[in-house]
Length: 33
Image (tube, rainbow, N blue to C red):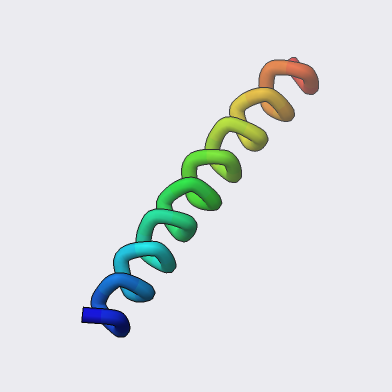
């Protein structure tokens, strides 16, 4: 239970990091253009 819970939290944080990275790239591209 505990390890799977930690795995879900890590997976959730990884998704947030990926989304934030994509948004940052989009904002940077718009700023350059």
